[in-house]
Amino acid sequence: MASPSPAKLYSDDVSLVVVLLDVNPFFWASANSVNQPTTTISFSKFLSHVLPFISSIMLINPQNQVVVIAAGVNSCGYVFNSESDGVSVLELRSGLLQRLEEFVERDRQLSGDDVKLAIASSALLSGSLSLALCYIQRVFRAGTIHPQPRILCLQASPDGPEQYIAVMNAIFSAQRSMVPIDACMVGVQHSAFLQQASHITGGIYLKPQQADALFQYLSMVFAADLQSRSFLQLPRTAGVDFRASCFCHKKTIDKGYVCSVCLSIFCKTHKKCSTCSSDFKQASSDSKTKTDSKRKSVEA
Image (tube, rainbow, N blue to C red; front, side, top):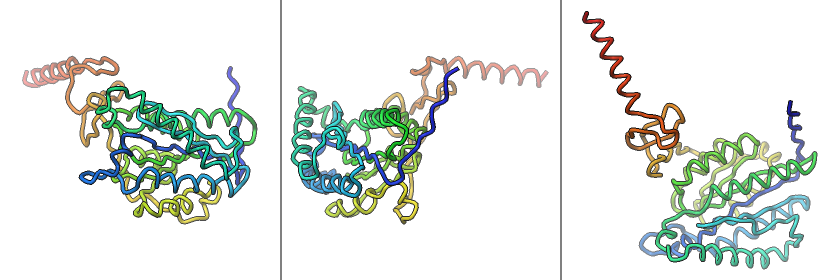
């Protein structure tokens, strides 16, 4: 019989903040488009607000730990860890900017000749969430007392419906591990994925009204540790978009068809479930046969 996992013991005022940074190079390159602006802030301006915020978390408590995960179109990876890197607050800006530049260049090269496809793609939110949860689990197993973990998603590019299943699995994993997912959406559109993530895990979802004041939003809303949040009046999401993405075309839908066996979602009727291979046509014909037999018995 397997031994039960030990209860988690947290330090009240020590935080582990895993920042998921959207560095989708193709999105940010088209962000300043005059015809269809996707965000009201440039990437350089975006980083000028994010880096001081990361420094402020490290200054609030020297024991706080910050991990930055970059999410591109083709890959995601760790670019900063305040514990292992051992850099000071003054060295943070230069070191992190250099690593981000190297990551963006590698991610752009992975696209190869499929530039048009890459432009239409979204940042790998599902992959970055998985990396964040894996790192938090390693911290849980490292000792008996842990910093209070939370994930902060700084997202700009829109949701990728093809990532729906992976994102929802990561959200439920975070909920089970009691890890709140905070989200700050700086793009023009709201993120249904991040709204659901914050709602399910007990985090905060925020879409700043003024992008030029992004640092103020970050420092006033997301800098406080989980223990202090019970004493603060933090913004609450007015509404949550619970729409799902279909498994067949990866599109966000309002109404659809659900497999009664594996709960897969489809936007159109199918003869067979593409996930569990259940035969929908056979089930419908069997129910029709039973209905006809009941009618004949009643008439008789």
